Length: 247
Image (cartoon, rainbow, N blue to C red):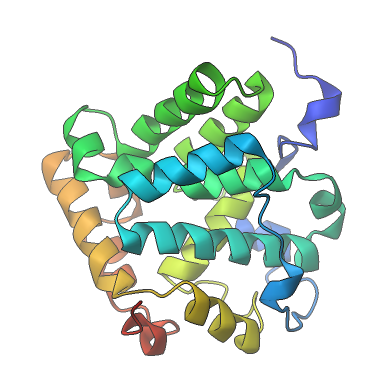
């Protein structure tokens, strides 16, 4: 299937460097972040597919992972608007929301144990089946979500990635490891963390990473470092003050 130019920008297919330093030119940000109120971020609840996938995510994901997914949507929305306004103006909020809701669906114990695939690949296949085949979503949208999920831990310095994939990488790494810590204004960080509580997320996700690598020593996650990655998540200093917040 040849790409439809009408859906490339809409679903975040535009190719961008996978190398974050190349994108930000070695700087902490392209545009200095300013505070953003949660009232200015609209969740696309009027999209029936988003509504159904949100119900699915609430049912299948632990509360810690669900809240992480919602924080990722907010971080991604803010980063896109303030750092990449041209891309943000054309990106579908629904496609972004679907990706955020499902990006860690492959990490649940049931989904990890049902396959030998790395969790990102399992998550991508689940997303395509759910969005396109079960809910009747557009092929381009379902595939964009799947591609971003499969590659959301595919960090590197060579080659390209979809804009949606890079955006999810930036948002998830910000929440998990606090890399690029200046991409979100501190006031906004506190407001998002207050709304979507971490509930000990750093410890929770660190355990999940270790479980994935122990169960599947071939897992894609290992390329981030069998010890380096879970330790980086566990000892996330930027988010440490919010990690004990629960609710």
